[in-house]
Image (cartoon, rainbow, N blue to C red; front, top):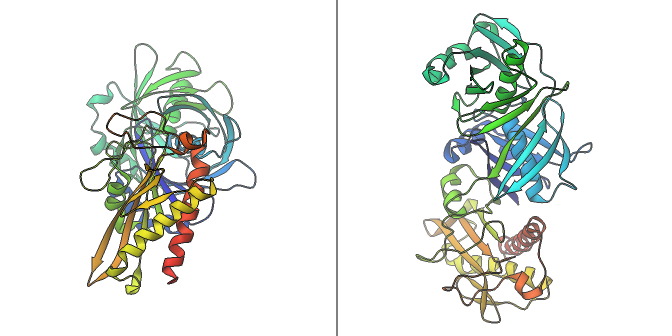
Length: 423
C-alpha cells in the first residue's frame, strides 16, 4: 500500500507520498498529479523514497506535472514528514533533491508545527533584466523590487513576465519584493507550474534575499522575509544559504472525506493518512475521537475492476478488514473480538472502528473506501466514551506511530489479498 499525506510550509500546501516500499509510479503521471492537486487544492506533490547516499530522496512536482526543480517550502515539509514517519536517526538529515543534496535540521517542534532549517544550493549571480533580476536558487526566478507589494497586480503582471521570450522555454517564477523600514522584506510570488500566486515560495524567498543583499538593500546577511501567511528567515552568511521556517501536517475534516474528494484520481491501495482530523467519521452521525498525533486514522482506497466483487460480498469485505486488525492485535498478544459491523473490542472496550463506503453499479462493487480509526497511544478519554481503550493502556507501552501504521496496514493488506483471491 502507498500512503498519502497533506503538509503545509508557510501556507504552501503539498500532497506527500511515502514511497519507501515502492508504488510511486502512478503518482508521477502528469494527469494524475494535476487532478490530485486540483481536487486537494495543493500547490504541488512530493514523493519520499529511499536513497543510497542520503537519509531519503525527494521528488517535487508542480500541479501541471512539471518537475526537475527544487521547492524550498516543500523541502522543509518533506523533512518534517520524514521525521513524522520515523525515517530520521536524529534531528539533522541529508536528502537528495532535483537540484542538489541538501542538509536540514529540525530546530523545534511545538503544537504540531516544526521549525526547519534547510540548506539550499548556492544561488547563481543575479543578472539584471529590464526592471528586475534573474537568479536561479534551485528554481528559476525573476525578482522585481517594488514600492508596495499590496498594490501589485500579481495575477496580471506575473504571467506576462513568466512567459517573456528571454526566459523560454522553461519560464520563470516571478517575485515582487518590497523593502520594509525595519530592513525586512515582504514578498509575493507568481509560481510557474501552479500558474497563480501562492501563499509563499521557498526558492523565491531565497531569491529575494539574495538579490536584496547583492544590491545593498538589506543591512546584513541574515534577512527576515514576510510571505502571505508566515515570516521566514534566510541566512546568506555562507556559500549555501539556509532557509528557516515552519512546516506542519495539515488538519483535514476526515480521511474518508478526503478520499472521496480525490477518489477519481487515486490508484488502488492508496492510503490517505492524517494525524489531525477535525471531524473523524464513524457509523451514522458518530464522530471518531482522537487526540492529535496519538492514534492511527486512515482510509484505504480499494478498486475492484472487471466485476470481481459482487455487492453481496460486502460482508466478506468488512470481515477481511476486521480480521486484518485482529491479526495485528494478536501479534501484540491481545485477544480481540469483532462486534459486527464495524467495531473491534478488547474485553468489551472499543479499540478500533471501521467505516466502509462502497461504490456499487449493477450489483457490483466497483470500489470502496475503508476508514479505520485505531486507538494506539490515547490515555485520556472524554466522559461520553467510557468504554474505549488504547493499545498503550492495554500493554503499558508507548508506540511509534509510523512503524505501527506500517504493521497494521500489512496485516489488513494480507487479509484483503485473500479476499481478492477468493480464499
